Length: 370
Ligand SMILES: NC(=O)c1ccc[n+]([C@@H]2O[C@H](COP(=O)([O-])OP(=O)(O)OC[C@H]3O[C@@H](n4cnc5c(N)ncnc54)[C@H](O)[C@@H]3O)[C@@H](O)[C@H]2O)c1
Ligand SMILES: [Zn+2]
Image (cartoon, rainbow, N blue to C red; front, side, top):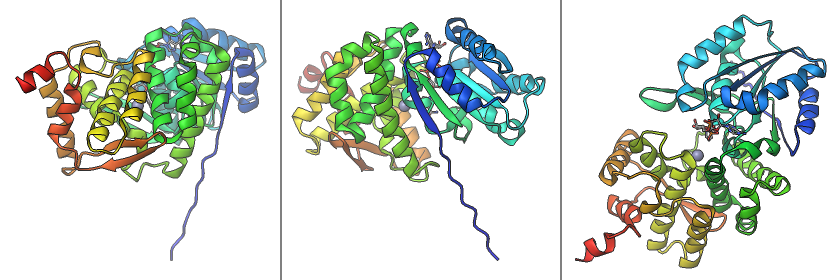
């Protein structure tokens, strides 16, 4: 005898420009239940304490905690202490965990929510651009392990995402640029309209114009949620969302996750993948130049010398060899062929990768030909 069980996850992504609207929406989602609000110290000081007070003033029972900011907190140690903290609260099975912060808070708290009482509902309130357009959406939750990033995690969808772009006004410009890299990626892989929108409006976005930023976040969330809906558990390894991430991950690995922000590494990875595509005759020169020009205009790295720290290229190639080994000898590249269209290549050679990384680097042309 066989029984089949279907499941479907559905949640609303609400984008607004003011905390007032965010509070109204959160109240509707929370619907009178208890709230355990978790954030990091920086976001608590800037926004989360005020948000907790606003929710409490509206009559909700709110309890809150925070942990130190930064990737080092995305750990089992933080998760364990949050589970201990939750166990000491009155939070029950149908009450709400509220994750308020960047990707570190959202990934860690989402994973804790997935484990506590076999899963309590959680709502994401992203506060970095990267979290608005990426981490808060899709239900991938995890903490890091000493041997690998995101090693311990789950797929656990939020009950809702409440995106107030007003929180971005306190974000450092460098973090805004890194977040934009992930939106440009979504434009290249799935939405020429989104790409063109960023081409026209990136100065307004970086200046923090709320209406433009809200449109950007909405556009990005439409692309991400529709791509995730096709494959929520990532069974298909040929994912266009990985555009820029193959070389990007190698760059982050050899520079030790930190000196180069994820979005910066992805921007460089996209520029490299576009050069590989152009050399293969898959992507025309004009479109490749449009992509690298937009990344550069935003202030993101497109050639080796743009990276904020020196990159050990042989070590990066070694990291890619290692990834190829782990994945049964296959290194998968998402290559753009036009705006909104990509192909997957399994046969990119180390020479092509090296050339794409070294292209435009000071002295490289001279060394190669001399
Ligand atoms: N789950 C996913 O699908 C997914 C997708 C992309 C990235 N991620 C993860 O996200 C993490 C990176 O996220 P991030 O870039 O948001 O980093 P982060 O959460 O560390 O935030 C960056 C810094 O900005 C501060 N900050 C947050 N909001 C602020 C605000 N409004 N004003 C001023 N400062 C603010 C934080 O305290 C932190 O110091 C990585 O761990 C990555 O693996 C997850
Ligand atoms: Zn990414």
